Image (cartoon, rainbow, N blue to C red):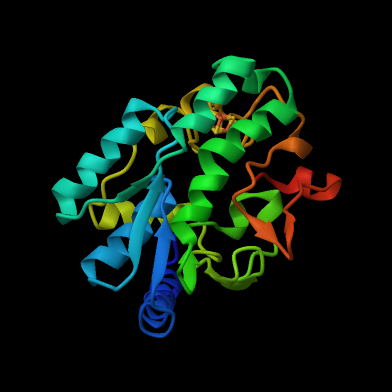
Length: 247
Ligand code: SF4
């Protein structure tokens, strides 16, 4: 693994300082965990240090069994239960009754409506009343994240948003996970570098973009779920950025 230890230790220490500062200066604060590799790094740092940052996940009702299994792994490892936010049952029922269970394959609008019901609305509920939220986003992870700041003014949610792993590489993430025996989603070992809802995520082939398995039937420019907003707008993939990477 290609990690320069001194650089990594500096990044890690910086991340610890950021998280401690969030816990002390921006309480109440919450961490939105997708239970993916980056988010397990932050979970480990928060729970080992017993930082005053709540952890929640969006249980969309369409997650992989392996992803749901991470909830038990977190509890077994750290003795902590991740708080789950689920979609409004009536909204899901209305969508399914009107369009069908898997209508997100029909059009971008139908897919975004499903994401709005199962992800965006629960996220808004989870964030309400907090001063700050934390994500596991990294700059190198996505074309939409190449200018990702460690701290952002999240105007849409009226709070600060922190991305403490903004400058971490994928190698840094896995170096931390392996060095600290952090539990991780077994789908990562089966060709899933990026994991979302089960029907909207597939494994990728070697050489494919790490984001290629997400909403793979769509044009890359439409690949947004609405969770991350910059300057009041959904982040978009522009043509040049599209060549660089992925969300
Ligand atoms: S990722 Fe797919 S199943 Fe999950 S909320 Fe979005 S459209 Fe619905």
